[in-house]
Image 1: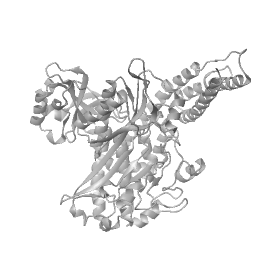
Image 2: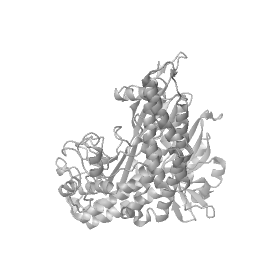
Image 3: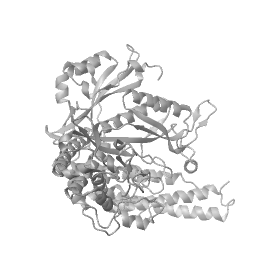
Image 4: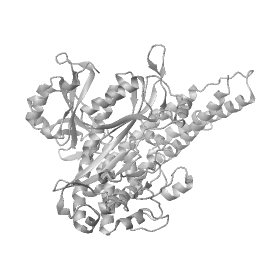
Length: 640
């Protein structure tokens, strides 16, 4: 994109510059920005986009900022809320966050020589004039509730200031809720199919992790980082991740067969802004890489058998004091820094995350793709457990746990939690909202019981069967061991809880843990209707994808597996494994007059509304498909 003058382009209109005169001035100074778009986020995590000519916007900025634009329920995912007979939805601009310019690098404005731009304005969804709905609104309300309630909890439990670098609640000017995500993604040349064995071997040999990028991947990555810097995202690094193979330099003089996994990290900010930033960053990354002939996917598990893509989500809480100082509420007081992991606020927040993760997980892992990633052996967390470190002077780097405690000796502001289960397709707005409401629950219990850091460390380190004032008796919440290698599957289930295997099993937590679900309803952050809407949206997506994509794709995979040997030119090995494969293939995908194949049983269960049965059959299908692949691979490898 060297043909564009980056210095002349507009990237952001900051939250501090949202007066009508400032907005008009910015647009008049940049005629290459031709359109306005309001970006609402529904419960499915989908963002709205439309093209409103700037000229129309400028005619009535005041009216637009106040009233936004109107759409209907068919344009957004809000089941049970925006029905066909009550579908009016307004999209109202949010003037408290940054607005971003979306550049079309394939369409140049002839007047300025710059790419045509659309000013995308993060917005709230409003139904029936007053009911605020959608993911951004839920996160905004969660943050507001967290701040208000935490200040009250601190005021009512002043003992806690003994363990903080603050004298009293009266010294606090405001609270700052911060978050950041790490974006992993795969890039490849179009139409290239992955070779699972080659990718798996490269992963085991660590041929890609943090290695130097080359060719178009290097160029696209470096260019993407530069563009992101222009937006003010404060990129910390971009690098290769564990997955991928070396690109091949073809006869055409270009790199062919690109298949690499990358990661981009950037600095934290406020929770709502962090989610907005991530949403726009994905668009920038896609646009830049596509200009170099590379497809980008943010799927959690685009390729079976190799590393999936995570999106580790970092969360922290700080107090901004009236004297200007910033104090991390999770970190212990300086005097205790060498012998305490956290303050009572930090311990309480972590315990709230772990105790209530059963109802947080439906917001984290809501797709079939998400569950494809969360399997032992690929650093994807499957057990509800944390690691603090063997000693307060030795920060933990245990990558097998669900929630990591991130600390830096000598830098208390760095103390935060790393939730390792989200993936790039997780709805970050709802992940953060659910997580902070769960943290608030834990903080409230810890402080109202007057617990010290020593007592809370003992609680979170309790053994199986030990009673606690807050945490469940028959669970273990802390381990400094490798969760995958040092425990059997039976021990993991016993100590850390049974792990949901499908979207259906995960969503059943809403009915299984009604008491835990109450923490989200605090002050109507998530109403009964909002939770019901989310559940229906997720299950509808699950059933449609299972019936319309996964089952047909599995059938197509089976059809492509052909007999490759000749009966007169084969050995017993070939006949044996081909026979086993055929029997399993028929069990999966071929009906008889007496029996219905497994794939057809799944369709029948979905159409009958028997989701529990469909879920069980999906698990069996996944196991049989993997067995089928292995059988066919053994058969094929033996042929000349």
